[in-house]
Length: 242
Image (cartoon, rainbow, N blue to C red):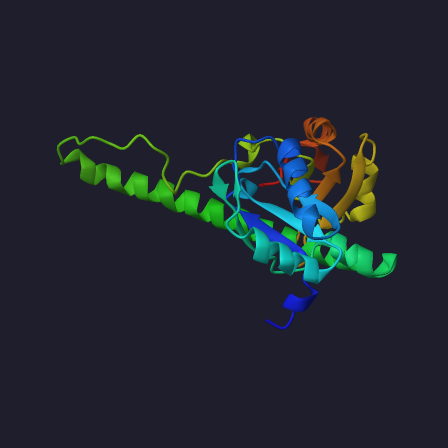
């Protein structure tokens, strides 16, 4: 792959999920620092990222050495699976670029992430509705059949509604009227402590993300603005899907 030589980030899989993130990050830093300068470690506790981490080196050669030497190394009795990350990390771009180039890169990456999250949310909602329709249409046919044992586990059609999503530091705004731009929303959401930025979703009307420094600030902002009247519309505010 042509871009691989410039990748200085190691993607680590099959880590023990029960270990707390600070402890895991410290162990990974100690282990991977044997092969070069580690400039950043990214490990998160959300469901999708469990058991994974990214180790960012200052030199692509160090990343390759770490993969060669530590492939299959057991950490908490589990063999690590190592590979080069598919793209450069934020930290790598920040180190190698001017502040202007880095900010442009970060905004573009966040815009792409926002578009992906919105598409996933729409897909989840569509599948949820399809599942509900299938349940409704099958009730009549079930009336003529003898009862059977039903599975008690979750099904693929069960999707958590927006209002029940767990709190995090980013809010997802829907039903924003056309007349409201970044400045108008800034006036509303910058009043809450920890405000960072507002990002409209490219190519999608009435959708935006509001980011705060921490979860508690986002909770306070959501509680104060959910259902707020903006013109003829009621603002829908939920937490970003992780």
